[in-house]
Length: 212
Image 1 (tube, rainbow, N blue to C red):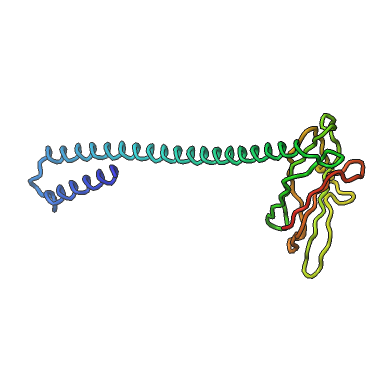
Image 2: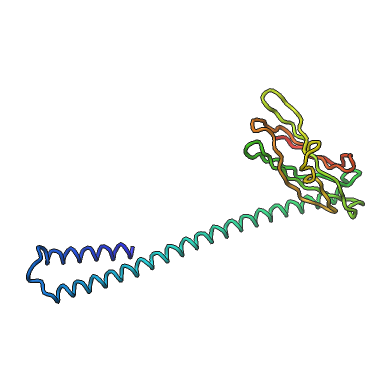
C-alpha cells in the first residue's frame, strides 16, 4: 500500500509538472527545473526506502508463515504420538490383567494401510506378559496375506523363502515393542486379509489377523 501510494503521488506530481512545462515552456526558470529535479530525487529515495520496507515485511511474513506451519505440523505430530502412546498404555494394562496364552506373547493393534503401486504398510504391537516377561524374546514376524488378482486368489508370505530382506522381520524385545514396515504386491492386486504371526524356532507363538 505504501509503495502504491508513493508511486501514485510521484506520477501525479510529474503530470502536473509536465502540464506546466509542456512544449519546453521558455518561462521555466533554472531554479524551477532544479527544484523539480530535487523533488524527483527525494521521491525516488522515498520509493526505494518504501520498496525495502515492503520487501522486508513480505520476507518476514513468509518466515513467520513458514514457522507457524512448521510449529503446527510439530504439534500435530506430538498429538498423534501422544494419542498412540495412550492407546499403547491401555493395551499394556489390558494385557497385564489377562492370561495371554501359554507363551504369554500377544500381537495387538494390527493395522494394514494401503499405499500406491501395490505397497502396503503394516503396524502392530508386540507384548510379553506373565512369568516369562523378564526374559528377552527373540524371533520373527511373519505376514501371510490373502491377495486377489483378477479372478484368482492366492496366499503370499512375507518374508518369502530366501528373501534377502528377511532380516527386517527379526524381532527382539522383553516387554513390548511397536513394529511397522512395508510389503508389496502386484500393482493390480488387492490384499483382502492379512495375518501377522509371531514365530520362535519355527513355532507360532501368537497371531492376529485383520480383513481389509
